[in-house]
Image (tube, rainbow over all chains, first blue to last red; front, side, top):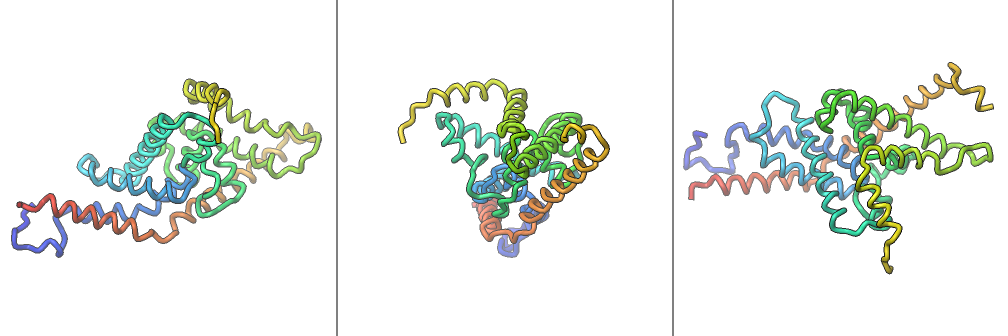
Amino acid sequence: MTRTESHPMEEREPQAVPDFKTDLLALVPFLRAFARSLTGNYEAADDLVQETMVKAWQSRDTFEMGTNLKAWLFTILRNQFYSDRRRAWRQAPWDQDAAERMPGTSQDQNWAADLSDTTRALKLLPDEQREALILVGAGGFSYMDAAEIVKCNVGTVKSRVARARKALLAILDKQDSLPTRERPAEGEAARDIMAQLDRLAPPQQAEGTAKRRTKGRVD
Amino acid sequence: MSKDEEGTGGKSRAVRARQRAIGRELRRMYDGVVNEPVPDEFLDLLRRIDEADAEKKKPS
């Protein structure tokens, strides 16, 4: 604010700004972890974090000092993730191949190059459940902070986390079990999840399915 | 067999144990990324932001 003209910029310090930047940098590892869990993809995650940093920097004036910077940044990251993906969906005709190429559902690169059963099972969860579970179960956010990040009420977050845990367990149990005739059909967990998905995001989902059936792609 | 297990304390204890294991696994994955060294590109990005900022703030 009271910067003198002769003061060289290399000496840094245009007031308060370094703090924000330092804090931002310190939170990058957490942003990367959240982004990795959302995208399931190393590069897409880091791109998302970079977008988030730029966005955060541009709107730093709207951040209220003393409030939770981490939650604020996570909110920006999450918004960015969904808006990027909506754009991708609009641009590409919906089909399974494209869905698998999309950041959110990439099969090849997992977080931490970790191909554990849990990682794979996590990908089968609806977004709403996965993000809630990650925020609360892994990220250490309170239900209240998580609710703010995903823009819903605390009760909804709680039920999403509970359903995510249940679904994850069901998926893992199915993977662990040896295939025997007494076991329920393979697709049951997936059907549960699709049913939940339908409930959570009905219109586009139904449309997408219809389109997928009539796809006329030539590879 | 599996009918017997349903609804018994043994089953829910087993479920809770599995839930805890899953929770640990989730934290392990998340913390694994948190503990990765931050690639230089993030520092570069902040530096570019700095430069752009300095550029904007220049009087002329």
